[in-house]
Length: 178
Image (cartoon, rainbow, N blue to C red; front, side):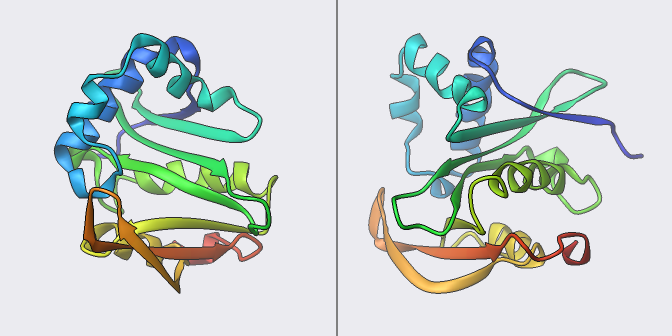
């Protein structure tokens, strides 16, 4: 049974839902994010409102997937413009709830489609950093046409581990990559 999902940008008024989903993300897959749950719990309402408003920003994107039947937020992805000289935006904050994962659900693909649509307005590539031990995420990104660039950096929360950079040419047809 395929569930109907709504994918839309977040806005400042979504701050409580953004907070709830972020805490779920950090509890579920702590190695995927450069923030601890303790740091997130200490954030103020003003900080959460600013994070939620990223969906309305000119240089940022934040989208969420919502189960249309229940209203439950089941996934999110974000993007922002990289440093001067980068070839395109950076994909960040990727999460899909455990019961909504997998190719058949279509949630991750729908979210990435939305981010790629935004990213094509800002550059020729979309890059990301993925923890070297996050095999599930790496498999998804590879299926969607991302490849390793050979660059890596120490993972902020455990510098003995690495975050590896992946990149995708946005001019490539994404219909053939699914």
